[in-house]
Length: 289
Length: 138
Image 1 (cartoon, rainbow over the protein chains, first blue to last red):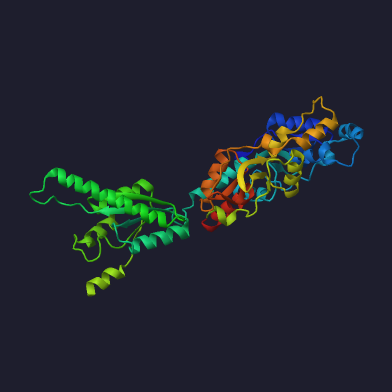
Image 2: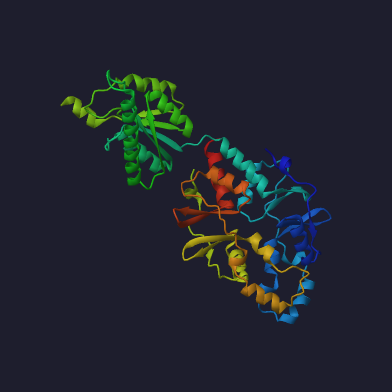
């Protein structure tokens, strides 16, 4: 994008001979804090609200009170203006102009063709253009990481890895505690099974709160997912816009559970982001024993 | 890129009892766009050059110069500061902070780590950071 598409024209200008008081009123009325100074349409400088303020009585201590009005009446824009730098042309790109603007405190940059002032381009418009550019670049880091864990496994490598990554990246960590679906054994009344499921999910929540309390330096959100692991993980990842899913063990070590390898493969295929499976050394040791 | 990578670690600060004249001088000397108002290290407000301009005596004032001067010396920041301050965390994404600044027309965002002021993100810092992002990934 080029400056000419953002430029405001015709510009609001003052001349070197303009009294300071007029310039100040003009700035307030137009909501501008930088005005180009021209002579016969040629740019000769800029004057800012700061330049005007510097020439106000409160900062001229050496003057005697009765001397001030006479001095103030005599001051013209030319006495306080600064050279107009940097200047841009209509063909300058917005990003380049924004770079040049960053070095100054000017609220707008004069746009010129040779010496002739064509218009002004505001700080705000340049900033909007630059921000738009930056936002289209894919962020290199992570903002939301989902770590899948099972309750009561305080040494879960997925949690440790998730915490370390979230800390390093300044990302939010979503701890998804997964409770595998349980089939109701024959002969157990439905009410009991429901009560059991409720209690299990309360316990999982309490455990997650304890984990969260231990790591105050990371922004942690907790979720309890039941039933199918893949569905629960995909739901949570979608909800929080996860850009990484971390998992390690999917059941407590030493317990028999459903084969989790297939679940992991399904998750990798369906996930909207990369899936990191951290090797579980504790489980490997258990298997060897 | 995160806010802490480009922010200025030291924010220009003043107490709520600072006079407008003093505040304007500090702002202009530092060339800073905003002054953070702190009450015992706690962030209570922010004052921008634009706020100070608005509080400046008008051209058609009937005040005498002495009265004007006295006012500027006695009127304090507490009278003109913005009390509801938008802030960001050091870990906030720069693009998010930029959106916030543009949407709310801010010239600076104080950076808070919990309750503690750790710096300030000015527009110039923002431009520098965004420029780096754009350069890094053409």
